[in-house]
Amino acid sequence: MTLLKPGPTSKTVETRHDWTLSEIQFLLEKSLMDLLWEAQTVHRQANPGYKVQLASLLSVKTGGCEEDCSYCSQSIHNSSDITNFSDLAVQEVLQKAKVAKEAGADRFCMGWAWREIRDGKPFESMLQMVRGVRRLGMEACVTAGMLTDNQASQLAEAGLTAYNHNLDTSPENYDSIISTRTYQERLETLEKARSAGITLCTGGIIGLGESVTDRASMLKVLANMDPHPESVPINALVAVEGTPLEDMPSVDPLEMVRMVAAARILMPFSRVRLSAGREQLGEEAQVLCFLAGADSIFYGDTLLTTSNPEVKSDRELLAKAGLQVNHKFHE
Ligand code: SAM
Ligand code: DTB
Ligand code: SF4
Image 1 (tube, rainbow, N blue to C red):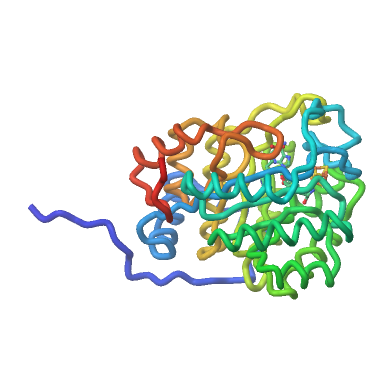
Image 2 (image 1 turned 180 degrees about the vertical axis):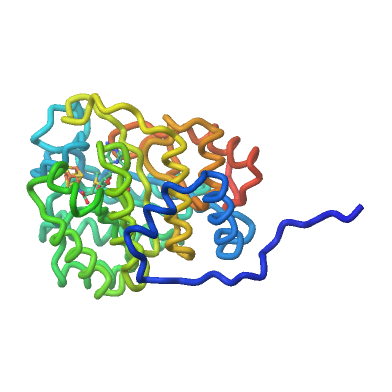
């Protein structure tokens, strides 16, 4: 009996930046079996071995944000209960980064609930945090709203690996979700980070009430960036009490699988991050997302203000699925 070993196929992966809306919508609406096959064909060539990056997330400055993002617990326009948080100091943050590294993470992402980065002491602390995380040998990612060219170059100089700023949804659906910042401003923020030599982490959320065409349209903006964003987080809405979207029905897990698969096909060499909403997905759907091309998760018991699967259960899941991680776990 001849055993067929799984391995790369002879077809080479093509990287394109000219995807049309109808091509992308066609992918999203394809038979799930065909979509998964196509995504796997790409993923096995781009990421042989199914390595998964573990990224830990920490909210450094929580709540009180002036923006009105209708999904977000941290907006002053919403009434979610997040009163127990206080801003974290440099040493506290670096201690948490060290713990995350020892737990197996190799990327540390820090969040500030700001409309835009402010100069002065908080920014100096941010730079120190970035330097400290890099000194630990981890990738450092910051998400803190809009930024200036000068701030972007200082962050680049401090060694920042990636700047996270999500598109969230399609240009067409955007105004129904956020009114205090424009889509164009989001694109300009990404451009500033890119010009300073920082890699981009940008993606979006499903489950906001958008149509399949909206999902395709958001993916089109991402996939037609040249170069592609190095990291593309796909979030499922976590419907937080006190936000206008608190009563949204939870996302069908297979819709996440479709988004991940489409993102993988469109951006073969980007990291596709299975982000918020994993608790609602269940193990089987997460495994399908890994098959479809997800190659990173947020790892740690909390996201920014909401919970995430426990480290222990994530380790078990990765082991059960036979996925490789970049670092060994330190018990
Ligand atoms: N204030 C910064 C900004 O908006 O860029 C950084 C923090 S913000 C919380 C980062 C991203 O997390 C948002 O753009 C959004 O895509 C995602 N996010 C926030 N709340 C979420 C929720 N309840 N469910 C799913 N994703 C969420
Ligand atoms: C991203 O796309 N998702 C992460 C990270 N980038 C910053 C944030 C998810 C937040 C989920 C809701 C919360 O915990 O407040
Ligand atoms: Fe503020 Fe970011 Fe939340 Fe929007 S998503 S309200 S910008 S913290």
